[in-house]
Image (cartoon, rainbow, N blue to C red; front, top):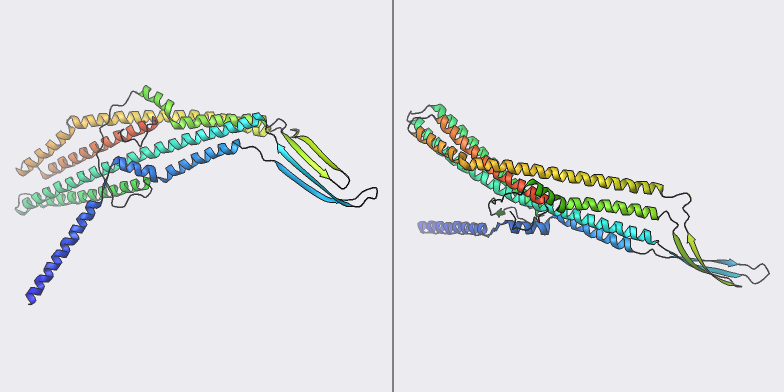
Length: 422
């Protein structure tokens, strides 16, 4: 009876373990792999910086409504006791008046044009933010792919060192190798374990960058799918420079700021003229009633807005200097990205032309010679370390080429959320 109960408990325990394992497998399968298009869609919907940029554009457009509004009239109401000089019965007096400021067409047109230029500037700045966030998201996505590849290389390196350590331990046990070789193998294996742990930590850091860009829309255990893209040849530098100067939104923003500064100067100059206001009023007392129509003019006698005009002129010079600075900075970034792209391309060609195969062949030869006692263990470690460095550098060069290409695409103002581009 006792044996039967124990068997039943074991069976229930086995079924429970199988159920938990199946549930874990289903949960793991329920975690979808996120592609580049899905990630970019999440970023476009949930990134807080993109949302703030859109709100800045809406605020600038609302400023256009403010600039186009007409000034409100002012209503005056007064009253008080009235007493006649000729002995009539005392009474009360009242007065009513309304004053309507009349804007000069030059003032109104300049103010509306300045607001329109501000809206253009805000829109161009929003496009700049969209470019920056979009290509930063692409780079973060490819960086996670690169980190996953680094982790795979570190894991393969650890497995290879563990195999080497096992062979060394057997040779030490039978007296074919000194104890020092086993100590060295254990040290190399420990270093490989630390490298693998560091690679996995960098994967989590890269995942964190993607979560921040998506505005917290990604769960902590998400994963991605894809591979580093194959890039086309970049256009020549002069063609890229023309494209950057023609389409980069940062330059459009600088031009719009200069236009707004110019319109502000026109507005301040127009405000030096007398600003009229039309007044209609009526006053009443027990003996008479008077209606008046008048025109009010502000006389620029003491304040001729010299300070405001000087500020507006300085604003134009500042906007022009900032526009030139922006142009130079964009061209400098383009030249740097183009140079990085060329360097990375040459490195990739070098790796693919035979360096990778040579490092792999060197390790195979060293392992075979070590098994036959023709090479020392240190030569195997050197060959294995060389192969690891070559693979990591090749992966780094591929990512650097993609990062440089993304910088060029950002400067050319290509839409970062279109997944047809690499």
